[in-house]
Picture 1 (cartoon, rainbow, N blue to C red):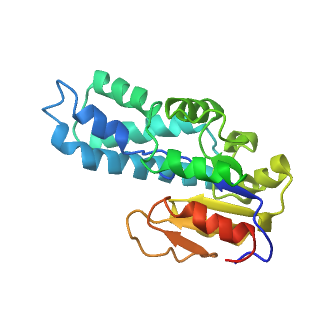
Picture 2 (picture 1 turned 180 degrees about the vertical axis):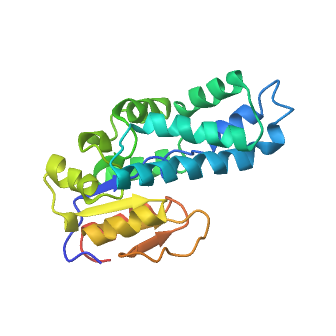
Length: 236
């Protein structure tokens, strides 16, 4: 628990605010997709898995590229694994990734936090252009004080320098920040960095055995305003 009031809520983007499975799900429901539509859950899972693995491997090896490149690389692996060699499908899936919807509870949740006067930001592996596109397509313009991208430090999460962007650009100590992510490894790493943390555990997964642990666990983002209100006044 934080030893003082929380002054800002900082969100991971992909999988936390924005539904990364939506691109494959939407494409599978479009005309002409009948031949591969049944494969979309595995395709989406493989795409996400490889996308994240490539960020970790590139961070460890110092071979940084932006998140759009690893998103394409992960999709190419997933398509090959599914036996799908279709340039038009690849192009459609990538286009949809720029239009990912927010999870259903997100607009109301963010509105409630704004009504509380909370400072809000995103801290993401996404490149600046991708983050601007996601926020715009979800009609969330003007909600966030900052869209913080790993491109400012040239290495992906969970490198500590990424979490340090919050203090550098928002003028906050780690203990003044509630960091919210659906990625267990991200929350654990953020907790080890010194943030107060909330894990959005949509899949009821076990807690990762890492060097930090989430302080709060939520099934979705609906209860975040009540949680943050308590943390901000020091009562939770």
